[in-house]
Amino acid sequence: MVLRRTLAWSAGLTALLGCVVVTSATIGSADIGPQAALLAALNGLAVPVPTLDGIAWVRPFAFDLPETTEYIVRGLRLPRIVLGAIVGFALALAGTVMQGFFRNPMADPSIIGVSTGAAVGAVAFIVLPVSVSYGLPAFAFVSALVAAFGVYLIASEDGRTPVATLLLAGVAVQTFLGAVISYMLLYAGDSLETAVYWLMGHLQHSTWGRVRIAAPVVAVLFLVLLAYARDLNVLLLGEEDAHTLGINVERTKRILLAGSTTVTAAAVAVSGVIGFVGLIVPHMMRLLVGPDHRILIPTSALAGAVFLVVTDTIARMGPGEMPVGIVTAALGAPFFLYLLRQREVHSL
Image (cartoon, rainbow, N blue to C red; front, side, top):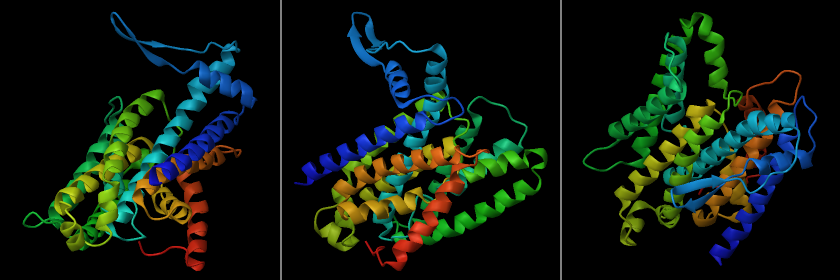
C-alpha cells in the first residue's frame, strides 16, 4: 500500500516537473514554443550503451531544429532549469529529514549552520584575491561541512549527541558565523555587490559543469536517506522507544545528520543561500501525503524541484532579473503564515 502510494505520487509529481521544465524553457527574451523547447531538450538526451570498448553515450533523438534554438534551450536555459530542480530537490529533501530528525516543525536545512558555513566560505572566496576554477562552490561546500562537523563535535559527549544540544549549538554557531560574514562584508570593497548577490541565492551563473558537480552527490544521498525513512519514522516516537524497537539510535542519527548536511552543502555551494524551500515544501507535502517518511521524503524532494523551477522562472520574467531567494521568501513567508493561522502546521 505504501509503495503503491509512493509510486503514484512520485509519478504525478515527476510529470508535473516535466511540464514545468518545458514551460520554463519557453520563457525568455527569445520566442521559443513548447514543442521546439521539448524537441531541443530531447535532442540533448544521451543514454549509455555497452560496447566492446566500454560504454558509449548515444543520443536517441535527432529532431531537425534551428541551431539557434538548440543553443538557447540546451546551452542557456536548460542548465539553469536543471540546476534549479536539483537544488530544490536537495533543499526539500534535507528539510524533510531535518524536521523529522529534530522532531521540530520549524527545522530547515540551515538549522545547524550549514548554510551560514557555506556563506562564510563563499564570501571569503569573493572577498579574497583568489581565482580558481569552481573555487567558489568548492569553498562554500567545504566550509559548510566544516561548520556542520564543528556543531556536531560541540554537541557530542561520550559518544552521544542529544538533539536539543545539537539544536542550540547550531543556533550559537550560526550567530557567530553571521558575525564573521558581516565583518567580511564591511571590508569587501568592490566585491560587496557580488557577495550580497550570492547571499541572496541565485541561479544566474548555472552551467552544465555545476549540474555535474551537484547531481551525483544529491542522487546518492537521496537513496541513502530514503533507505533510513522507516528508522526516521521510529525516531519520531522518541529515542528510548526507537532503541527498544531495535534501532541503533546514535548510528542512525549520525547517518541522517551527515546525509542531510552534505546534500544541503552541495545545493548551497552551487546556488547561494535560498531560504524557505526546505521549510515550507515538507509541510505542504505532509498535508497531502501524511507524515510517513517513506512517502514524504521522495514526494517532498520532487515538490521542492517543482517549487524552485517555478520560482526561478518568476525571478527571471521581469524587466530586471532578481535573485530567486527573494521570490522564495516573498512567496514562502506569507504561505507559511497562512498555514500557521489555519493551524495546519502541526507537531511531528
